[in-house]
Image (cartoon, rainbow, N blue to C red; front, side, top):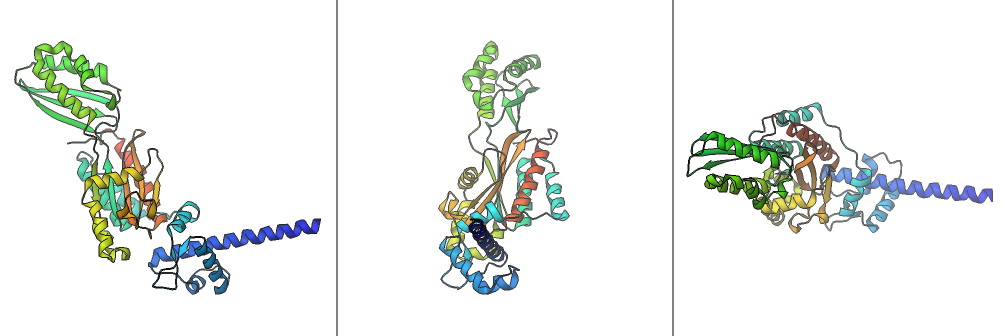
Length: 365
């Protein structure tokens, strides 16, 4: 009985060893293909990676991996390349994040430390910096106008016929509108209206505020009906928004350097995404999460057929704990996942920190 148990344990150890060896072979194939964009053969694996087994053993393992769907053989080569299933297993179980160099960290911090008064130029700088570091395309979004809570409202009397409406959201966004008045209004009347709005709206979810609610708040200002009506219209627009995010795209030309996109048809399909903000927005929205987790979407998992030769890594950034937007890297499925994940995590952390600084988190329309 004891002998039988010993045999069973030895058998189990052999199975475990075989499975571990298969993982090492798959890891070597994927790392080599990511680095060189060439199908990988058993001889290459044996020479370049110290697996401690013969080429024949590597061939057997590759045969099993192919049968199980983790690698595949292109028609043009005897070597193997990873499949979508293989990349997914690699990302979930084998990938090791690459440490960033001091220079890379410095580049991220330098861009993020810039002024965010003009959100468009700030986010575009972030996209371009990330594209330079990854050599892939980037897509970033800033939040739709109706996201977050009301943090501050100001009505500034500029003249008898002009009032500046300013709204600050908890996400750091600032909206401002200039109200042109048909009738004169005093600074005292504007200040009274501002106090009522502040008293009733601070802390409210933007999406919960509608025209009827605002009308009720301003019903005592019938003498300034023109002002009240105009303020209502602009407040509703500023609070509820148009339902659209602003999309920023950087580094598109970097995709031309990737061998996968030497195929003109593939390149046309890819560029059709970048030429339409709505499609780019749908793409980043569909692959990003609502929580703090970074998401990795690979090949056929991509929601749009045009980009199923690609993978996308998306990270959210936050303002005082609330999701404020997303930034993503779009590249070939042969993406350097370990390095890109490290860059995205660093950027997300730095961006969230900078955007939470209320002195810097200002959006000028």
